[in-house]
Length: 277
Image (cartoon, rainbow, N blue to C red; front, side, top):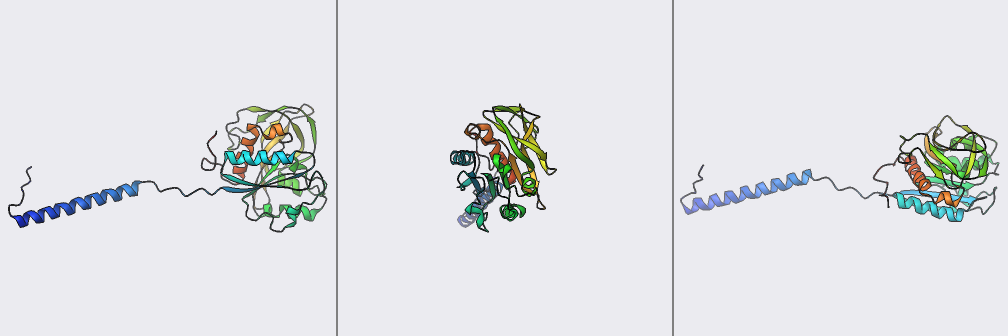
């Protein structure tokens, strides 16, 4: 079909104007459609704010708190604040917990302290108060042996009851739930380069075992698990691994604690995990 141009100058000017308006409208419509189809920009990710509490008997907490903090921050969008108090004692009520608001502003608390000889129920309740209110937690190694006040409250929080451990030797860690989001990618087992297996008297009904340690001295013991604590069903990730620096700096341990921390915060996803280096 042939488009015939207007023969008079005025008509030609009106035709040109109409054509220009049509072209502008078409370009505007196309740009609007392109803008609507373009995915919205993601909001900057707010890092998880974690508090790592260490101190007490029998461990190299000065080195281990740095290994854990740096390991977590390298693997996930987590900012870790560390507190080491109590020296090498087993019965110190550390200054941190004397504050009523000691956990305010944090998204998760990592308990890696070792204070077994504090038979004070009120002190235990002071430590547990934010977790009873729903604040997620991670319990590592000697945290399981803390705050023995004659009740089971601390054990219920941890998810397991343990009062002793075995000898020091490397051992195998066997994955019990490869489909669980924390345990994905670890395979059927891995080697812990240096171990001190905690002997588990009881796994509480609220806990879900994720891995066991191959014990040379007795039957195998649960050494990695999750727990839902109290009326709020607060998420708690636990492991009894972590006595020696060789373990704490190992890839498997740091990967596991990172994924467990994210799970406790309900943020175990690709947004919060950083690409592996």
